[in-house]
Length: 349
Image (cartoon, rainbow, N blue to C red):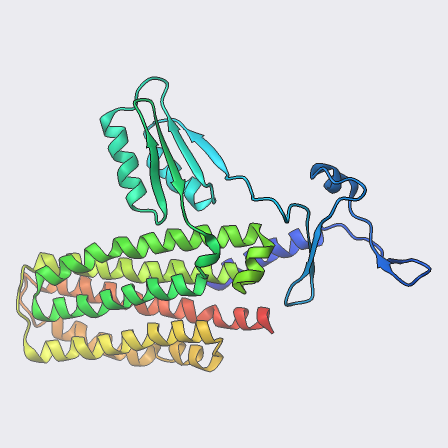
């Protein structure tokens, strides 16, 4: 399924959810005041009675939000997990779902190995801290304030790191710099941390209309941000795969003509993902189309690199070809990001 197909499927789901909403007729009193009845089950669920006060606010697109708990501090969402072989995945899953407190509780004591698993997992998740620990439990709490993390800011930060990884991994390949290749691999952890944070924030926005309004992000935009963030994270992964190939070359020096071809290829790749992200943020359809139109030029540059790679030593050739092929995938991710621009533009128009 392509990115556009996936986006269309998600939009269909959202549209279905909207269509299932209740309808109410607008009524008017003799004095001219307009009013509408609230659903009985909804009012009873929140304990609303005659004389109760609710907050009414208007969104930027003209919708009215009715908040029955405007004066109350929302209770933290809590979940209890048991130690087990999939505990790390469970913690990450609950973090992404927006749980504020994650309690890991054992029937008796929690083993040293399981505690280390919890601590390692926590280190991968921004804002999650161990606030309490004893022989039978560990209490994790997310200390982030969602309104302080606009999705665009998180995505830009993640992309800046991935773009730096791309530059450095090509320099590592050209110069046979194994140390720089290891540095690229290490930075991928931060890209992943930012991706997890963005997914958590996007889920929170979808569930909280007031936060959506505060951050200026419509719930439908969250689909675009989630897909774009995933593609940026993929760019980081391609850089890691390339860095591993550089390490397998063990500092082998390349010929100057071959270095020049790789740099020319890299320049086109970098331009593609940089323009794709700028097009996404700006809603620039022409810039997005320019990314798609680079395919032939990039194909020629790739062909030149592959031809020259076959003239290198038999020991180095497979690793070089694999590295270049992996780098080329960055262009495909750039095209996928560019494909998000048109739907995003239509949603906001």
